[in-house]
Image (tube, rainbow, N blue to C red):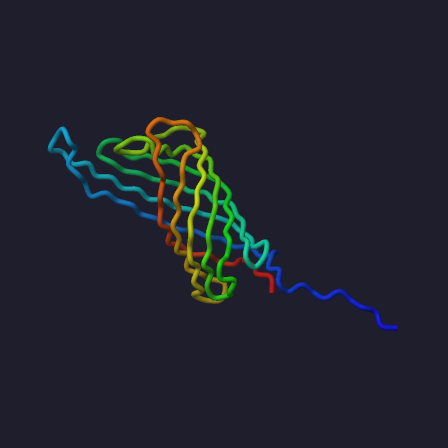
Amino acid sequence: MTAILPQKDTSRTWGNLILGSSLTYIWDPGYSQSNSSQTHRYEEFTWAVNVATDLSRRVRVGVDHKSLFTRSELSGENHYSMTGVFTQYNLLPRKRTRLFLSAMLYNGNYCSCDPDDPYLRKNLFYYGLGWGLDIRLTRGLYLDLAWENMNIFNNVHGKYNFTQYIIGLDYYLWKKK
């Protein structure tokens, strides 16, 4: 009598752990304000750190934290933060390249609500969509190129979208074979 043993499911990739980090720089070299001849310069650095795992070959979930540092002639230097969860749907389930769509939910204090500069407002909730591309550089190290567009849930006067490009690295701390 031959026993029938269950076959191992090789399509699952959960059990891996991916650490990611990115740095984004946004600048506005200046523009003339309508009522004066002064210019307004604005700079914004965003450093993001995230941890993720793959639930399947197509679905990745994770937690992300963004620290935003701004500098402006109008509002000086400021620090904001956003923390949330994301999910990504992989359109190309290959090992060397990932093309993905993403959805995210965040909580933070970065209010993109002023015509000139963002300002601090506690307990804001954001939802967002994006897309990206991960390109394998070496075994376990990937270049992360992405774009995100987030909106504020809260009823805040003058709110507008927070958009951001992402250039970063993803490193597989361990990867299920």
